[in-house]
Amino acid sequence: MENQTAPEGFILVPHYEVQASAGNGSLVHSEQIVDYLAFKADWVRNTLGVAQKDLALISVKGDSMEPVLSNEDLILVDMRKSRVEDNAIYVLQLDGTLLVKRIQRKLDGTLHVMSDNPRYDAEVVSADLAADLHVLGRVVWSGRRM
Image (cartoon, rainbow, N blue to C red):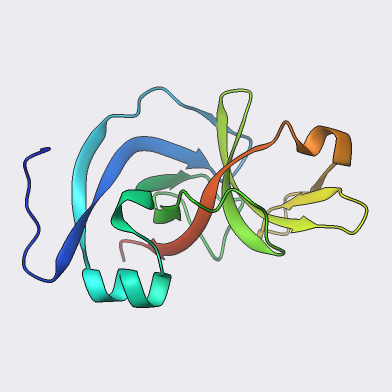
């Protein structure tokens, strides 16, 4: 799969065999590329403002981010964005577990890690522990099967 070439005007983004849990967490078992998806190069450059090398495509597992993200949705992650900006959705790694959550940074340095589904409670990460929360990237696009 590594020798794939994109059609003219498109880029190929690797789809990894990794799921970010929209729930209680999903362990990373493999980082194997299972396929590639083509995106218009102009759209990626001008709308997302991201270089091809900084993008990864992974799947969502669970329902805690519904209605924004649903089980088995594909998410495009900007791997450069490891700094938390207010109220954006990120892929996080904590103790080998991947999560996809909305994060708000408070003035006192705490982080509120939230699900969009109201059935799930938000978690507050103290300023001291916030450094242990590894942000892999910001979700910049999602797609789903109808």
